[in-house]
Length: 370
Image (cartoon, rainbow, N blue to C red):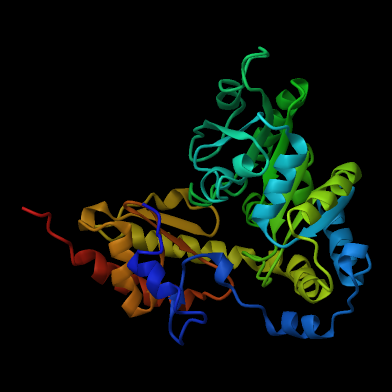
C-alpha cells in the first residue's frame, strides 16, 4: 500500500520540514534544497509579469530549455503534474483514451486528473520493467469503431519512477513514435527525470526526445531547483499550452525568482547526476548483501533503488517507520516495496551510514501471527 495520512511514516515525515543534522533523507529527490548559488540568483533575479510575457528570467529559462531539447518553444509551469495534464488536455478530446504503463506516474500519482479535468481514461499496458514496447502498446490501441472510445495519446515515462528509475532506450522511443504517428497518434513524454536518463545513456536529451510530440521535465527533482517544471514542443503546442496553464491556475506573475534557480539547475546540475547514480548503485549493492532484503542491483540504472522487505515479516510502512528514528528516511511504494532515492543532498558517506542501520532493522524480523 502507499503511504497515507494515517501511516506512521507520513505522519512523522510531515513534521520534518528540514531534516535534522545527520538525517539521510532518501524519500525522494524532491526533497533537495536550493544551493547557495541558486539562492543568490533568486535574490538578484530580474523580474516582470510572466502572464504578460514580461518576465525576462522566465523567458530566458524557456528559451534555453527549448534550445537544449531541440524544440521550437518551452513553457515554465509550477509542477510536473500540471505539465503532464496540459499535454494530455491538448492532445486529446473528452472520451479519448491515453495509453500508459500501469505503474506510470500519470496513472498512479496525478489524482486521476486526466479523467477529472481532461475527460480521458487511462488505457493500461504493462511494460517490462516499466518500459513499454510498440507491440505492448499496439495490443491495447482501440479499433476505429464508432462505439469504442478512441486512443488519442501514448504517454511514456523516462526514467520510470515505480520501475526503479529504469531508462527507455532511444531506439524504443523512436520506434514507438514512428508507429504512433503512422496511426495519427501523439506521443507525450513524462520526462520528469529525463536528465538522469540522459546521463545513464550518455546521450543528449535532444536526440532522446527528437520524435516525441511533447516533453515535460522537472527542475525540482535531481536538478535541485526548489520549484518548477518545463514543457517543450512545437510553437503551436506551447502557444496553446500557455492558455491551459492559465486555465488550470498556473499563470504566475514575478516568477523570475523561481526561474533564476531553474536556470542554474538546467545549466549545471546535469553534470553531477552521475554521482547520484554511483551512490544509488553503492546502496543497491549494499542492500543486495542483506539476506532479509531482496533486490537485483544490476538493474539499478539511475538514482532510484527499490527493494522488497517481505522476508522481514514487515510491511514497507512498518519497515520505513523502524528506520525513521535512526535518521534513515525512506518511502513505501507498495505493500513490501521500499524506495530510496539518491540526490545532491546525499553523499556517499551518508550511504555508508545508512547501510548498517538497514541491516540491523532488516535482521530484526517480525514473526507472523499465530
